[in-house]
Image 1 (tube, rainbow, N blue to C red):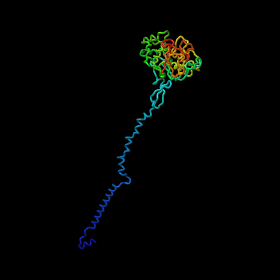
Image 2 (image 1 turned 90 degrees about the vertical axis):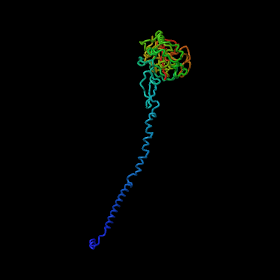
Image 3 (image 1 turned 135 degrees about the vertical axis):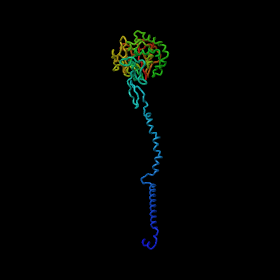
Image 4 (image 1 turned 120 degrees about the horizontal axis):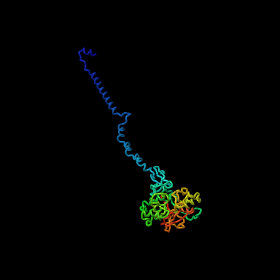
Length: 406
C-alpha cells in the first residue's frame, strides 16, 4: 500500500506510529529500568527474611553490660583465692604441745604430729635444753638432764601397805616432769662456772600449784658463798665430797656436800625447782600403786638387791647405774645412792591431813629429805621413809634432783 500512495504523488506520512512505538519502547525500557532500579533499591531496602535486623545486631555488641560486668566486678572470682587459707587454717597451726614425753606440732590439717624425741624433756614450747647439760657427756646412755612426765594423781603419803599403814594423809598432785637422775658432778660444774651470776632472782622458782610459795627469798642469798672460788671450796670441804674442780673420774657421780640453798639455787638456774615432798613421794610410790620400793611389782613386793639400788655401800655409784631400780615413770636412784633435798620444811606428823598440791611453807628447823643414801639399810630406802636435815648442812649423804613444770 505504501508503494501505491507514492505513485499518485503523495509524500509518505511521518513515522509517527513508529516513533510512538519507539517512544513507547523507550519509555517501556525506562520504565523497566526504573522498575529494575526500584526493585534493586527496594531489594536493598527490604529486610531479608533470613537476616537479623541491624539494631538487633549492634545493640548487644555496644550496650550489653552483662558481657563486661562479670569480668570486672565479680567478687566471687577473686575472694576464694585470696581469703580461703585464712578461713581454712586451723587455729592451732604451728603450735607445739607436749603429750606425756612427746612433743607434737599442729599441721595445716589440724592434726598433731609427733616431733623427734626430746633429748632432755618436753616442756613449754617443746623440747627443753637446760644450761647444765650443754656439751657434756651422757648418763646411763642418755642426757644427764633427761626428765620423765609424771601424770600426777591421788595417793596416800607415806603409805606402802606393808610396813607403813597410815592412810590418814591423802594428797592429790598436779602433773610434772621429774628428772631421771640425781644431779651429777659434771652438771653442777656448769652452775659453778657462771657463779655468782647463776644465783636466782628474788621470787624465781615458785611452785605454780602453790599460791603461797614465795620462790627464791632474797634473804637466802646471804647464806650462799660469795664467789666462785668460795663455792668450789665449800663443795669440796666435807670428807667424801664427790665434786672436783676439773673434769675426771667423778663426773658422773651425784654431787653431794651441797646445802639446801645451793640445791634450790641450782634447780632454779637450770629451769626448775626442788620437788615438794608430796611430788617426790608420788613418783617413788607410783602414785595410787603405793609401791614399797620404786620398782616393786606387785606393789607390796619387798625384793631389793644391788642391781636396783645403791645401799649398804661405802660410797655412791654413778647416776643411773642401777637400771633395774627404775620407778613407774623411769626415774632412777629414788632409793639409795644419795638422799634428796625437798622443798618442804619438815614436821611429823604432816601439817595437814588431806591436801591438794601441798607443800609445807611454815618455817621449822629442818627441810625434808627422802630416799635414803648409799650407807642406808634396805628398810631405810623405801618410798614411804621420811627424814630431815638442817638446810645449812652440807653432807656426803645428801644430793638432789630437779622438777620442771609445764
